[in-house]
Image 1 (cartoon, rainbow, N blue to C red):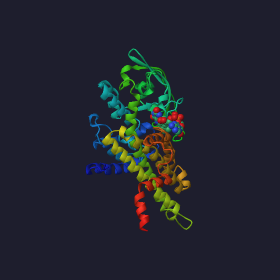
Image 2: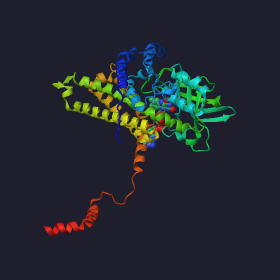
Image 3: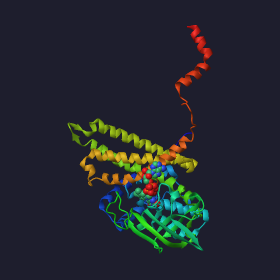
Image 4: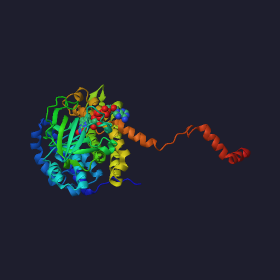
Length: 433
Ligand SMILES: Cc1cc2nc3c(=O)[nH]c(=O)nc-3n(C[C@H](O)[C@H](O)[C@H](O)COP(=O)(O)OP(=O)(O)OC[C@H]3O[C@@H](n4cnc5c(N)ncnc54)[C@H](O)[C@@H]3O)c2cc1C
């Protein structure tokens, strides 16, 4: 089957505009140390320009005011936006709001719940609300969500939620949380878990802290991009806050995570390319031991390996996106798992090499590399740790192999079989000698 990642010239023009806009208008904001409110004020006019260009919240289907671009085009956009943490916010498609909007949209499509669209989805799409996705628990392994303990019990026309979550990104600045909870403990979690929308101000929602992390050790409570620890104690919400249908939590999560991983990987490529450009610029600028760093073989290896790895990750990700566009998310499961761990590794390696080539400057806060490096480390953990995705790929691959007492390629055995098969020919050949 032919693969075709080509995009039309009109779309390429949009990408050209985005590249310049991101570099000239958004990169400089990184250096200003803005708090959340200041950031919102400063990026407002930039968001207006994005809206005028028809590029706002482009991840959504046309019915929801998006462009219906599909994953290949969206991926190419995310590659540009991912270069800077502000990029996705300016374009109205930052995580977790973009994925949460998709979740709400899928749920509304199923149930026809127009009230949910008006009350929550539309303000989220308009950038007037913030959301968070609250699934991971400190006391159970997030890599195996079948172990989730948080419970949501139906009581008349309400759900009553009890549980303890953490790493709810943006939880402390969100207007609402999408909580993954067990609604029926008597069936397999794949059928017994649900997603429920919980407004942050609901009594019983106790956001105890933003967890300080390697990315942000000085974490100040209520900062955009932080990761909240939350207790849900007898939290009552209307039954209508259920997203989709009861028991659909896992299937909704799968639908949300597929496209999200493509976007993550393309954003990582944007980051990798930025680090790579710094690596190369330094290599041709710095002299040590009688020659430019660019003339040392180790540095050349870093340049060559980084370029090859980024190219491979890019093609793998575009292929996964193409497959998703053409055959649907379930068909692309292997490809999506592969890019998740491969892309996270490439990001980490390229930034690491860029730091090394800059020496002490690379380690310092005078360059963005140290922060990029700290943020990149998380890529190997969130959205499922590398090991789980490797396991998916290995398991699915190994399904295609049958056990064999002797290796199929065992040369003595094959030789014996070949001799038997070609006995006549061999006899003739030896007789003619
Ligand atoms: C920056 C960041 C943002 C996040 N944002 C959110 C969010 O918004 N909402 C949310 O709900 N969660 C979020 N998370 C949580 C994230 O999804 C979980 O951390 C992740 O799923 C892993 O779960 P865990 O931390 O409980 O690790 P565990 O499940 O305890 O796993 C720990 C380690 O065990 C090993 N391991 C696990 N399974 C296997 C296996 N099958 N084979 C081999 N080794 C294995 C891996 O090395 C893994 O790293 C975020 C995490 C980070 C770091």
